[in-house]
Picture 1 (cartoon, rainbow, N blue to C red):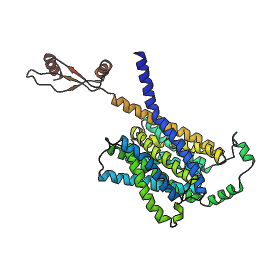
Picture 2: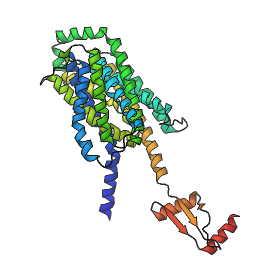
Picture 3: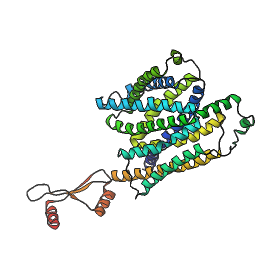
Picture 4: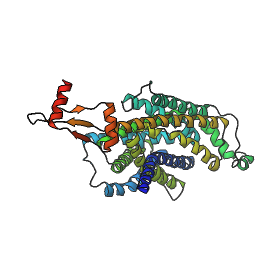
Length: 405
């Protein structure tokens, strides 16, 4: 029996680790998307067209799985569910992606990721407003979530507003010895003029993203088919993005795309960070809640900062390192609070309803009598099953009724 118990423990550990591994993996996927997309936007690709192609790739990549795997379990579509999907597509593929790409074009990948780290705070506040999260400052777990969210935002703001001196890394010394490329310096100077505009765009994108988290959690309760929901969001978002592109882009030449970085950016963003990410994100939100999913977003900034120093030869500043430390501290504070909350929920779910049933003199079943905490603990230790009913002879039941009276 020992091997079976051990295997069950390992299986339980794997189940608990899955949401963490999934969200960390998504951050690597998002980080790659930021770097590749920045290169594509710098080469002149329209972010409106990029959003269309991205979600077209996403729809085509995940639709076959939705049709095959959820054919028998897909819920019936109702007008209310379709309205929620329409709003989700508007928040995610249209508003969030277009404003985020515009902000990314006007700023930098590291700065964009830093600004998006307001997501945990926005999501937590919105979840509280919509009564998806309960805040009781008398409990340590709630204080940890509130303080962790504030510390995360403070770290992101520190990384954004305070640069400090350049910190040379082992892998960047050779690159920085040659100095910045003249074209890169000119592009950076031009981007500084639109820095404020880009920051506003990124704030709007983050607000839309937080709204997506909250609404998606509510939609999954009504439409419990994550793959189908992801496909519909991407498909409806593609149609909406096409309309927006025709309004914003007058030239038909912007739709041209070849086998180059633009195609790679659209395909990578569509397959990895839209179809796969939306699906995995939906599963994590369903099991752990929207705040848990959004709390991992600060990791993306750290990954992008490292990847940017490798690929784009971006400098790593002291302020970025200090901000990253705060972000990681706030991240684990939020996760600790969520972990304690999950433990409390699991403890409540494991409570075993125990009742005493007896038969009176007329052959009728007496009212259910709930056991006190001491008796309940004894029953839980001995029963080891979901529900326990202790049958009492009629004479004992009558005696118990007299004692209670």
